Image 1 (cartoon, rainbow, N blue to C red):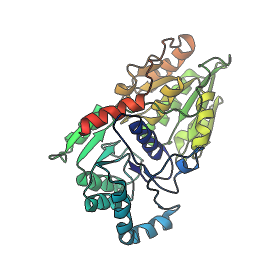
Image 2 (image 1 turned 180 degrees about the vertical axis):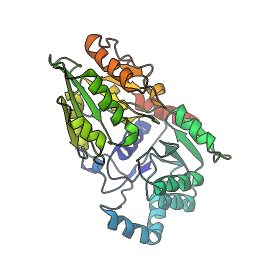
Image 3 (image 1 turned 90 degrees about the vertical axis):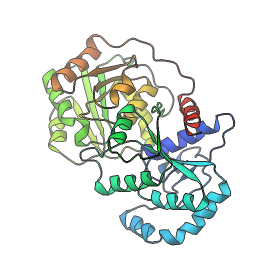
Length: 349
């Protein structure tokens, strides 16, 4: 299992899935992460069998690309020492073609988890998706985390003879289980969290809050990282809203989720959502627009409510959390990551 990103959901996904594979009977999983990954600073840190020095900056990335041919023999030796039967890329990244070359030279087939079929508006660049396409073309097979993404991949016509399997994104837990929603006894605490990009529907959220008007029973935080925009300015102008535009490190996520009673996902489109997975694990209420893979991910969750992707429907759903909050018990799954790992092992065999 490898993922060489420095921060965010990719490295964490790799850590969780590798650990889950190791909890499956008859499976031994090795993990490869970047030495610069924030996962390496966890206490205790994950067991990383093949750490790789990547980069800390754009100049560092360019140097790493230029020196990649010289690094290939050592990487091949590292892969061969692990003697894997199969490799899985947990999320595509900029340096993965180096690992693909090493795996081919070592005679190891690999699968790649494709979280998105297409780039989201405002997310990354054409280079990012071109690198993903090249990596996918080298792979034995593809793994999608929703039927929505799987359908998009099939529609591209590039699958060929490769197999495509579909899994579900398990919940992401960050720290101890927080107190239940509304247990603080104050106003409803609503959190918009994640990358602050156009496809997340910041404009829909701002318009919905304007429809709700000033309310003493609602407190809103927008936390995440993205370009400054008219939509963020509109949110800041609302008296009950606080905007924290910065990268939120993983060691702050538990407290961020614990503060919230509910998370809002006002997406205009979506593949599936790591934020939704974190909300499910923290047993927070969720209001989400019924777009893309969010429908699959949330329709069976008793603490989640789906609505149309328009301001009036979103405002109505948010108001409903105050007047008629969800009261269903979340489904109990002892080890959803191990369930995903078992399914993958069955599908990839």
